[in-house]
Image (cartoon, rainbow, N blue to C red; front, side, top):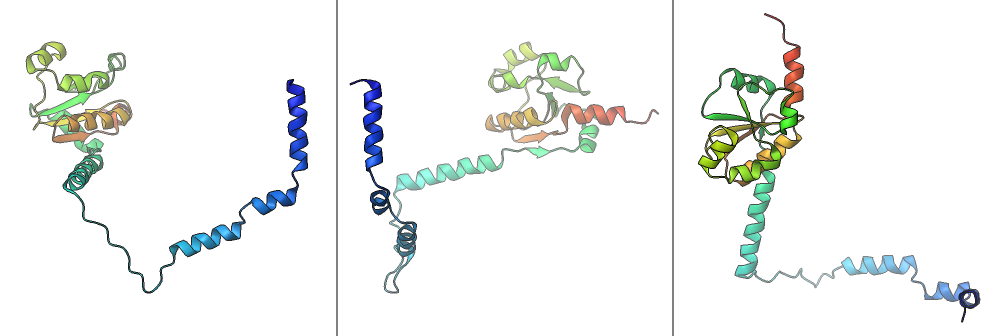
Length: 194
């Protein structure tokens, strides 16, 4: 059987099916609505079914999911406004790290005073690096978990991600300078000359 013969026979079969036949086999929209309406009705004698008690495995899974949800809620670190960030740069402290997570080719444009650079692309691995190796690779001490760590990038997107990475690696005192390099340079260029 050739392809053209097959097409002609399929067209003939389709023409022979009458529209009333198709309409009688289709489910009418009113029937769907009635079924949906009746499925939600409960008689006055019915009581809502109570759920069976959960197994210890289900309870443990629920607790794990709730813990994960708590982490999700805390993903965004506290945002540090420009004015407070400016004070941190003017009064550097060994207990505070300002970390620029831009890539080296971006850092060539300049950095915020007292900041150090750990590109976001290596941040996760860097936070798992032993202290001695970290010092050799980056040229400064690895931040401790309890230290204040402030992240910035170019526009605030990567600093938010860096905050998440740090949180998931056990850091507790995380701040995000979301205005980042763009806000810093615009506010610094508008400063009155003293």
